[in-house]
Length: 209
Image 1 (cartoon, one colour):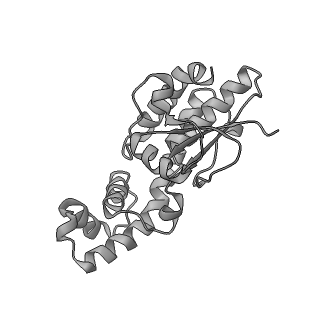
Image 2 (cartoon, one colour):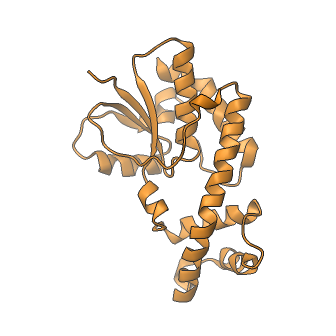
C-alpha cells in the first residue's frame, strides 16, 4: 500500500508550499521516519503558466517586478503607470492587453527570484539542496492523499471545490499546528523567505505528530 501523502498547497507552488515540503521532508529524515510522504503543489499553476490569472494578481506580480528591478528599462514607465493607477473598472481594453503581456514577461523572473530567496533561506536553516523542491507542481487529486493542507483560507476554498466529494481531511497548515496562516508577500525578499522557513521549522514537530 502506498504511504499517505501530506500535501501542502499554495497558489503557485513557489514559496510557501515548497518551503513546507522541504522542511517537513528533512524533519522526517532527521526522525528516521518513513510513515508518510510529504509533497507540495499549487492550486492555480495551470492558470499561472497560461497567463490566465486575475488582473489584480497580474498587477501584484508586476509591482513585485518593479520592487526587485526586474522590469525592462524600456517598459518600466508603462508598467509603473498601470500599477500606480490600476482600478479594474477603469482599465481600458488596450491597457488590459498590455498588462497581460507585461505579466507574461515579468512573472517568470519574479518567481525565479522568490525561488532563489527560498532556497537561500532553506540552506541557512541547514536544509541541504537535495531537499529543495522545484516549482509549478500542479495540484491533482490522488488516491493516497492522507491530508491536504492549504497555506491560507483562500486556497482552502479552491481546494474544497477541487476535492469534491472525497473524504480527504482538509485544513490550513496554521489550523493543524494552532498558528496563524502564512501571508503571501511577493515583496518580502530574503527576510520574508527566512521568516517562512522559521515558521515551518518552529512547528514541524507538532505538524508531523
